[in-house]
Image (cartoon, rainbow, N blue to C red; front, side, top):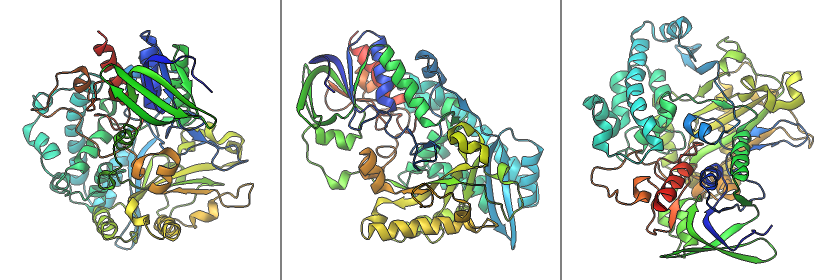
Length: 525
């Protein structure tokens, strides 16, 4: 497919959800917009796919929950999407003194949650600490959340009026210190810590504080930090954004893998090949929805291996004929309705990190399971009538470097150990509940960082395009241009970031696209 024109106000490289967000905002403002996508479909990581052919079930193959997408953005673009709350926040099974027990946290915490803490810890102190901790974090989240769709403020401005001790504990000192000071129970500490480690390979005491930044991003979405299930799968979010962009007049071309961007003071030329011939268009501004590391290559710089991001996760999609029963006795329809933590006790998280850092696949990998079909049966298609369910596993501390040699064997080992760690808490092996597909194989699909890079061109398989940054500016940071003010600047005035690599990017939020669009509109006056 060829573009209709040869010049545009804006060309967007990458039609993932952020690129589509930017396209919709800019086209609605009357600008000519061309979005170029390497794959034969839009959406990037935010897609729904029939991963197991012939089953009719459409899974959120890569990204899977939504929290950071601002409600204001959905209103601005008239997005027809439904984000549904899960009935349960989390369940975390564990072995305690030879007993199979667990920690249940309701979506709306009540007596069942308090009793679960009491049964696990022997009293109310840990639950009271839990409530106090998250009440404190909510104050910080309510300050940060509205700023995400506004020009950057400085750290000093963001901290103004907040408890200085809490602020310092969250942004100046390793998060592990705060978790250990506030909580005593190993499992409770671990459940809190997991939000700091999703897609982030670090110890809770890492001096870089990358874990602190990851933690904040997981708790600030719309001021509540709630992670919701997109009805009809993550692809429904992308489809709504694509419709909004197209309806506003944006042009979207798939099968267009950009090979070069040549920028100058007046704009930039963008080149790509569609498999048959090369194309070139010119734009006043280019928005990059690819990782900053990839953008530098497109601009003609050398690919520096030492600066390449490194992802750290194992994603496994399952299609089950039934939910497995638990040794703790909790109804699986309750246990799997939220985030199901396995091997995520605090000491276990640190042990797994140490093993992975030394080049060993963790013996009991920490990870989380999500059964989206309990919240949204529509993704199952006709299988919903037969008790089937989807199950998504996201494993922590699985850095790309673990699979650099003996990739196939290491991948099989990681999957086997992850399933073994899940099976510890089940009455029946998980694989005994997995459906067989039309090809005669079990409906199990695993993705390590190398797969993510191959599928989505995310360098190192890093789901955030690189380590997350604080969602504010440093006190000495230059904020003189619109691109700097919106956190989307590169070294080139005519090329801006609009993806997860932008300041305040990461996860399915649309923030990178929204903020890049605002910067372009401000630049044009």
